[in-house]
Image 1 (cartoon, rainbow, N blue to C red):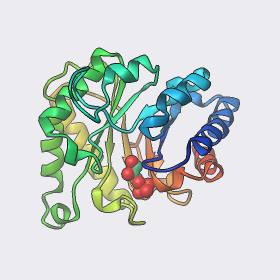
Image 2: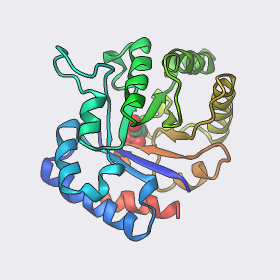
Image 3: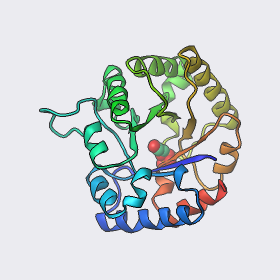
Length: 241
Ligand code: 13P
């Protein structure tokens, strides 16, 4: 079974979030595929959504998290808070959040999430400049090695390969690029004796989701823009059935 995560980023009113998450999870639970469908709503809605839909809280992810469990860190969100809100886990290291986190900090965040028994979806990816100068794989290797340096990772990790140039641009990495890159990521992980699910993100839509998910290395997808319309997102989920 494949995983599909909808990352809502900075979108939706509270009412839209309440209605749309119900539409999506009612559908996936009816089809008995709830364990593999996740939504990452904006932070202010996490506790509210988890409270009103306790049956779906294990399918709700945070869009980011910091390493600190508590303290004088204005504007931050801690793994402990996520645990207390009973959500499943968090995306970490998304390219749109990395300006707030160092590689070292991300590594500590992974440890903190693990301490709270939360799922961590570590996002990595290269920029267009890095791709053009053939530095893409080097960048990914660096991100994996630095971001996974502080944690024993007992099993709640997933890695999302999201080339920055493919996010929100309508440009998707070719199937060959995705397959080769995920093979490289697997190899780097195997040097750390890690074997974790790998997913792809970057302009995934209903037309390309099937072929991307048919690649042997792909365990699922991380969807941004095309997860916002619940009926469209459900069509994407149907392609994975
Ligand atoms: P898009 O699907 O809009 O390209 O966004 C991908 C993404 O950043 C998901 O985290």
